[in-house]
Structure formats: C-alpha cells, structure tokens
Length: 112
Length: 116
Image 1: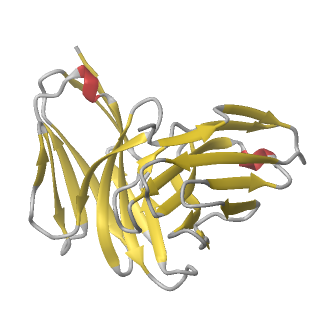
Image 2 (image 1 turned 30 degrees about the horizontal axis):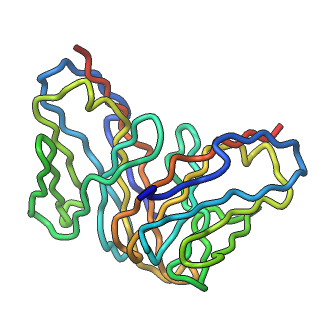
C-alpha cells in the first residue's frame, strides 16, 4: 500500500498562474483533507471532504477550490496564485471524520 | 476563538532524558485531542485521546488528557536521537461555525532535539 500520495513534490509558480495539486489514497478511507503548513503557524485546514461527493471549508479556504473526484482522489486548485500561498501543502485521509489522519509527503509550493 | 497552545516551543535534551510536552486548549464542544510526530516530511499519528485520566501508551511514549483543566501531556522516557522531531497537538471540535460543524485545530508544535 502506498498510503497517501501527492503530486507534485515541488512547484514554483508566478503570481496569477493556476495549478492543481493532486492527492490519492489507497486505504479505502472515506474522509480526505487539505492542509497548509507555514513557519510559526502550524497546520491549518483548507478544505476537507467527509465522504465521497461532499466538500466543506476549513479554516483558510479563500483562494482555493477542491474536487473530490472519487473515493480515492481529492485535488486542490489554486485559480490565481498569490505569494501568500507560498507554503507546504499536505493532503491527509482518515477512515471517517474523527479518526486519526494519515498524511501524504507534502508539496512545497513557491509563488513568486 | 479556539486556541491550542503547545509548550515549550523547542527543547534540547540529552539521550536518556525524560521529556514532557504540554498542550493546552480552549475549544467549544471538544471531541478529541490527537498527537502527531513530524520528522522531515509528513506528520505521523501517535495518539488519540477522548477521555480524561486514561493513559495511552506506546513503547516509551505515553499521553494523558485532563478535560477539566483542558490540557494534555506527552511523555517520552529514555529519549533517543530518533525521537528528534516536531510534536504536534491537534484538537477536534464540533461546532456550527463551519458548514458541516467539524474543526481540527493544530498547535504550533514543540521542536524536540535529542543530542547524543
């Protein structure tokens, strides 16, 4: 089992460009999450999907959109990247909401 | 506003020492508290605590929750250099301010360095 995989591992964007971060899990989990981690800020929840077909905002959703493509895949889209979105992005999944989460290896995004 | 505060922010100890990491919280409608270990990459799950006073243990690591005083501690005994990491505390709450009433708030972490 690969667990939670994310692509790409690194990305550099210019302000205004768009991109999609991909996440997939092979643990048959119902719930999936996107976080960003910034120095001195800890992990902050951007969006989550409690189950296939549903998505909900977390603490910092502005500037992002998500798609729960199927049970395995949950993507995060930046429509018009801004320097404030420079961060490390983690995807996670859990059996259901309120169970421990398993994290992917992260995507380091730099917006210039 | 929900708060999760970890202390200390960083800690340096010698191999063999015992360390105690703290996590205090203020959240409405508490559901659970989780501890994660983050080395160079992704956080990995350590413990989930939902009931007061019941210690959870895994090898040299243990954790306990006090829901009256609103804190948890993570103990590591006989530390090893492999314990060097950032330890994250997260508190799950159920409340209606979010669309589906779910929130998971992370503290800023405690950075632990164990020296040989």
